[in-house]
Image 1 (cartoon, rainbow, N blue to C red):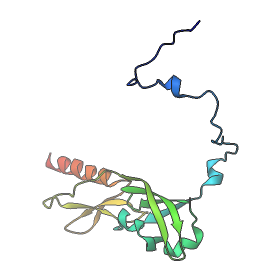
Image 2 (cartoon, rainbow, N blue to C red):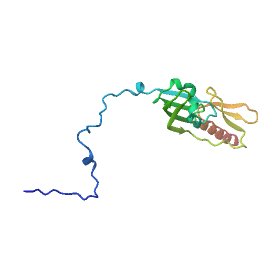
Image 3 (cartoon, rainbow, N blue to C red):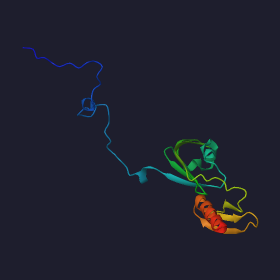
Image 4 (spheres, one colour):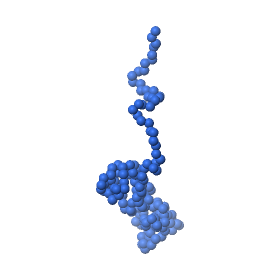
Length: 166
């Protein structure tokens, strides 16, 4: 006595449940050892000087002076001194005088337009101590300093100009 089986049309794709095998494949290894991230990955940090661009940290020779300290798999976080961008790099190869890196991520923060010429103030980066400052264009005197971001300084200028106009 023959049983009748139901056949599917050839154009139907199998469901997820039909494709998952209940047992692991014989040739695939199961993870037997795991390590905490802080023990497995070396993370380096560099503060880029004002005026340095993220692109220049991608060149082979940029990291040549620290090539002896780096290994494949290490990661480098580069942040701008001004705080307006952050670059995360992955070390792919290390030579005697070169380091090949790949970009993991790049973020640019608060791209602020320049203050117009007729405004008597400029926003300038004055280093890690004074941070972003508002400077008088006429006298070059510091009007206000210690803004964490360029946007905060520009916002202060706009509010200050409104208060002067009122």
